[in-house]
Image 1: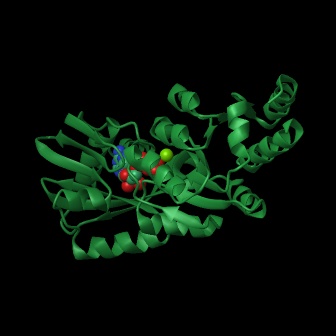
Image 2: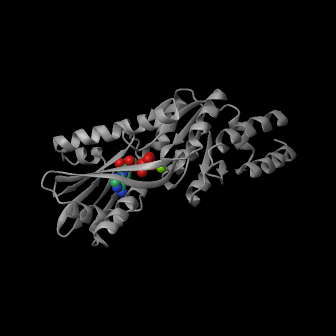
Image 3: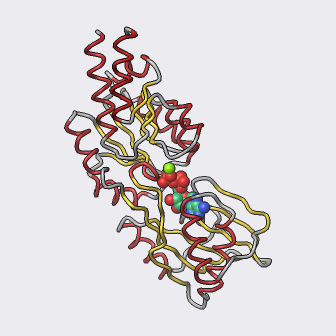
Length: 293
Ligand code: ADP
Ligand code: MG
């Protein structure tokens, strides 16, 4: 790339809210045929709210909120913040959880009032050998098919409650996806969320493929699999979790909501959370390459 063309592209990029780190990023953009979009914090705002709470038979709402609130209070996850906030509103400041452990992509655990409390996905519970009671299992399936994420709470190995949480889709997400399709690109939704929820959200946005239940540490490997299939991949993501995937992709686009780790891994930094900037950035890269070559 000539320095002049690169500078012109950088200037246009800055207007769009895109920073171009170097000509290497522009070179890879030409061949992009697949755009992988991270769900939480990218297609959604990452502002999670609890929309429903269901209790197991004989469980008390106060105990469920106390246990879940204590564990989630110690976790950084957006889901955790939503549950801790609800608990605080209803029952006041939760106690401190002892022996807290965050389980990336699954949930969290800790000791509350002398009880072993587990909070997280159905997958986490299954892996811990804990089954949902039939009525909560039916609720879980129903919620997830409707695009909600469910979070179960277990106390000493027995499920006591279920939360339905929801994240807000960015208003620009659907439009950005259809623009990417109009440009001849294939779209993939990538998430740690369960299959049913991911499919419902994917269908709502018109995203073509879904890669669900991908643990944070496996996101880069998911990109590699697409590349092994002959795809040239742009990854759009945010946050610490997405940094290895952004770095592994042929073109990494970071939606800036935060961290230096993600910024370092990305080729393109999107400082607006308006997702129109994604097709815009790829178009800009293509146009710049036409100028250069
Ligand atoms: P995403 O790919 O959407 O950013 P994560 O990989 O962070 O999602 O998490 C995947 C799933 O793990 C969540 O949808 C949720 O079911 C569960 N999970 C992760 N952390 C927590 C937590 N602190 N509390 C409850 N559930 C959690
Ligand atoms: Mg995420």
